[in-house]
Length: 501
Image (tube, rainbow, N blue to C red; front, side, top):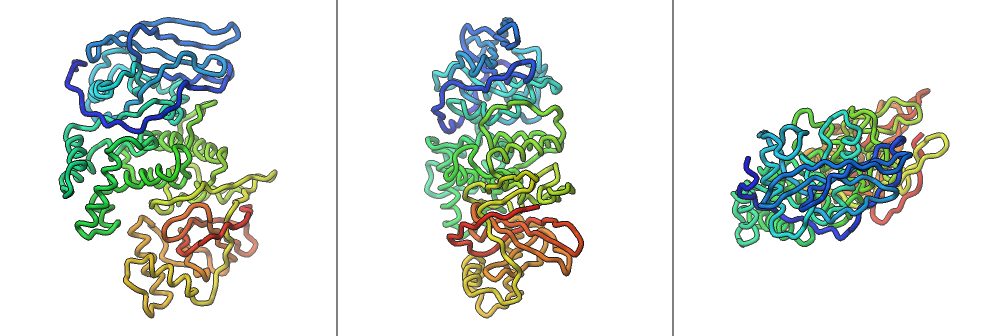
């Protein structure tokens, strides 16, 4: 493909005001350096810098390519002491690879790139004075066994957070739909449908959306358009999720961004969004790298030795624990069969218990000398044999789609609540536990005759309740745990500490 092809329209995302990139210092012999490649304009040399006992070593390799009428070279920036030296301001380019491939016009490796790479990069270069760009095809080390590749993939949050801008390349058809949304009072079904089917919207619900936009009209117009569309047609939020699932997921991400800065979202929010992204077969690694990049903007200090699903899941949970956020324990994944840690999910995919918009701080938790997890700011509730409280009935009545509960009994309330949770993505158990001030729906049913304690978070909430996990102790057995959903009003409760042993 000729690099002078007509560029695709680009949507400019949020501007980031951070300047020079900073890396923690590590010796090369002990840790791999984290490379941040930038496609840079003019006469920049490709410096591969390695720190060893003899000091920095340099080798220069000119990688020339013509794009948009200018000559470009690839420059690699590696750690020198405590920071990257002379790192220019750069733009990150977000786009979809698709299925088409063509020979790499600039580098020997990778030998082929997406047919969308050059048009996306060319579009990102439009209407800007920026002279350096980061794009995956040219800037991520290509050899799968290369430890620098893993370090780079684990540092995507860092790379995107340091960018001056993130620019996303949409198809011309989608770009026209974006313009229509911003111009018309009456929302056209076809414009929303075009955007909902756009591959970037369907597949890129991770890194670029972390830096979504304050200055771009695109995302603001999208949220406004969906709201107006619902009002004009008398649709519910459930209807929008059914008709436009990808746009609905993007709207949730916008809401998450508005209430939490990049990398400050809870693990639950990240897992919930991943549940609603379209994943192609064999993309397990991308799933975890996306989640890691969404919860931290720290550079990788030591990449994992292997890229197995289990290793990447452990890395994600470790990153969350270092940030004192353990809401990953509320995943619907099976529990680990490890003494003292049966509260934690088994290493693997980490689906959320309900893929719905939530808000609040991360679930705080600390570990004692016995490696027991102490959840902080939680409520400990017991199952009740009495009817639901009047306050619980009123709260649930205001949440349920039914106009009023009237004289409905507790069993009917349980059935209606469960049906609504299923529409929201809860996939399991209709059995509910009455805890007086609300209902708790465990992911699976506790064994009969066991002693249960329902532990509910006060820090991460949904409009209908909060996250929870039930501690189960049967006779002569060790405790085990089942995640679930609490439907009820937490109010201003702040909770206390509770040990998961």
